[in-house]
Amino acid sequence: MPHKTFILCTGASKSGTTWIRTYLGNAPRTDMGPLGEMQVWDAATEPGKAHFLMPTPPAWRRAEFTVHRLLGLRPRGKVLRWWLQQDPSRYVPWFAGRLARPNTRLSGDVTPGYAALSTETLRRIDDGFASRGITVKTIFTMRDPIERAWSLLKMYRRKSKLDDSLPDAEAFLRIFAPGGTGTTDPDYHVTLARLDEVFPPHRQFVTLYESLFTPATITALSAFARIPDRPDAGGAPVNAAGDRSALPEGLAEQVFPSFAKDYETVVARLPEAAELWPHAHLLTTR
Image (cartoon, rainbow, N blue to C red; front, side, top):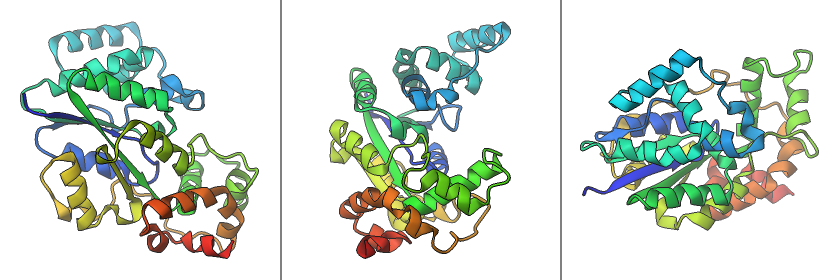
C-alpha cells in the first residue's frame, strides 16, 4: 500500500498558515479537507478555545450531512466541523477515509489554534493515525513574536474586538506588556516543548515566517511533505494583513519581557532568527 501521510500544522497564527495550506492543497494526490481550519481539537479540548465550538445545525442540515457522508459526497464544511467537535474520536477515521482513496496519499489539518494542544492530545492524534498505518508529520511556523502580536492587534481592530476609544499603542500594551491580559495562544517555547515530547525531529518541520516564502524553505517543505517542489510559489503570502504600518517607536522594548523566552528558545533552535526577526536584537540589550 502506498505510504500515507497526515500533516498536522499547529500554527502559529499570523505566521503563514493559510499559505501553507494552499501550497499543500495544490499538490497532486492531496486532500486537505473542505475547511481552511478544522478547529476540532482546540475547540473540544482547550477551554480557552471553546468559542470555536459550532452551534448545533438545524435538523435538515444534519440530515443532509448524514446523506452526504453515507454516499461519500463532500460535506458542508461547517456541519462537518460541528460533527467532529461533538466527538473528536471521529476525527482520525474521517481523515483516514480521505486517505484511503486510491489517488490520495497526503491529507492534513492546518489550524493555528492547535498551538495550544496539550501533549496528551497531540499523542492521541499521533497514536490514532499510527494505528491505521498513517504517519503524522507536524509543521510549526513562527513569526517575530512582537511583530506577530502587533499583527494580532490589527486583526482585533479590524474585527471590532477592541475598545474604539483606545489608541492602538495603549491597547497593545494592555494585552501584551508584562501583566497584560495576553491571548489564548501559548508561547512558542511551550508549543515547541510539547511537539518535541511527541514527535521525533524527522517528523517535525519548524520554520520562520520571515523565510517561509523563499525558494529554499519551499523546497525543504516540499521534501518534508513529499510533494512536487514549486519554489516560485512564494511570490506573495496568502491572506496577509492589509495594514503594513510599522510598530510605533518604543513599544517593542516595553513588551519584550513578555516574549523574551520565545526569542531565546527560537534563536537557540533556529539561529537565523537572530538576523531575520526584527526585534531579536533586544536579547543583547537586556
